[in-house]
Length: 460
Ligand SMILES: *Cc1c(COP(=O)(O)O)cnc(C)c1O
Image (cartoon, rainbow, N blue to C red; front, side, top):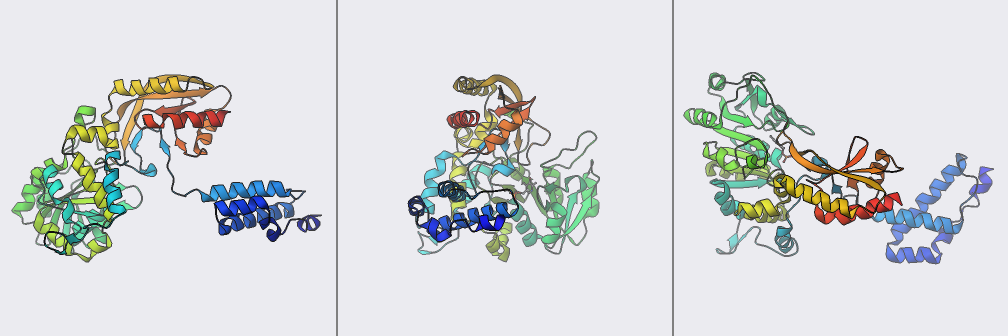
C-alpha cells in the first residue's frame, strides 16, 4: 500500500519546527538544512514507491539522517588527503607541497594589498613579472624570466610569440604526450607554428636538424621525454649542438624541460639530468619548466632565457590570458629564495626533502610508526620497497624506499584500503602481497598520529 505510506511522511514545514532542526539551522544554514530534508524525503518516497521500504522512519531517525547529510554536504569538495603511496609528485594528489617556510609570504600577500603592479621607487605603474627577476638570475643565470599559469601555457606562449607561422623542428623521439591532452605536435599547431619532425624514434642526428632548415624555419625545439625513456640503440643531439646550430642559422633554440630541476639529484640515487642553469649555460635561448614538479613550488610555468625574447612575450596578448595570480608569485619567489642555500632547499622544500631522505632516515621513520601502531590489531612489518618521483620526471627510475606493511586479523587489505578512503582525512595507500603499504618517502612524520587514529577508528 505505498500510497497510504506516502501520506504518512511528515511535511517539511513540520520537520523544520523541530528543536534539533532549529539547532542545525543555527550551526549551518537554513538553505543547507532545507535542501538536506528535501533530499532525504525524496529518497524515502522513492524507496517506498520501489517497495524497498515498508514503513516511514520516525521523526528522530529523519533528523539523524538529515544531520548526517548536512554534515557531509558541508565538507569542501577539495580536501586534504594523506599520500602514503610513495609517489612524490602525484599528479592526482596535487603534485608538490609547498614549504612551511613560505607560509608567511603567501599570507602577507594574500591578505593585504601589495606592490604587485606598482613600482614603489618610481611611484608609477609596474609589472607583476619583475618580482622574480633578481632571484631567478641568481639561481639560473637567466637574463630574464616570465611566469605563466603552468608549463603547458609557457610552451604555448613561447612558440606563439617567437615562431608563429614558422617551422618548428623537433625530434621524432621527443613528440611527447603528457597526461590529459598535452601533445607536443598539437601545442605547436595551436601556437600557430608548423611542426617538422626529424630523425627517427630512437635516433636523431645533428644532420637531421641541419637538413630540415630552410628560410621558413623558426626554431629548434628540444622536449624532455618526461614520462618515457627510449633505451638501447639511441642518439639524441645535445643542447650545445642545438644551440650552436640555431645561432648559426639565426633561429631560436628552445628546450621544454618539463620538470626542470634547480639542483642535481644524482647524489640521491637518481640518474643525472642537467639543471636549468646548465641548460641555459649550454647556450639554449629559452627554457620552460613547471613550478610544481621538481622545483617544489606552486603550479606555474616558468620561462627563462634571453631578455629580447621574453620582452616580446610580455607584449603578447596571450600573456594576459595565461597570467599568474599574486599568490602564485608570492609562493614562487619565496620558494626560489630557499634555493640560495641548497641545504635549506633540501630540508625545507617537501619535494626535495622526500627525494633526498636517506635509507637510514626512512628506516628510522618506519620504526617510529611501527611502535606507534603496535597496540592496534595489525601484524606490522617493515621492509624495503621502491618509490617514485612521479609527475613526469625520471621515467623508468625508482627511488629506494622503506615501507610499513599492515595486515589485519579479520579484514582484507582491500577492505582496509576502502575504509581508509572514507575517514575524515582520506589516506591513499598501496596494496602489495595482500597487505596495506605505507611508504615512508611520502608519509610525513607529522601525519603518523592521524594515520594511527584512522586505523584505530576503521577497525574498532
Ligand atoms: C609536465 C610537462 C609539461 C606540462 O607542464 P604543466 O606544468 O603540467 O602544464 C610540458 N612539457 C613537459 C616536457 C612536461 O614534462
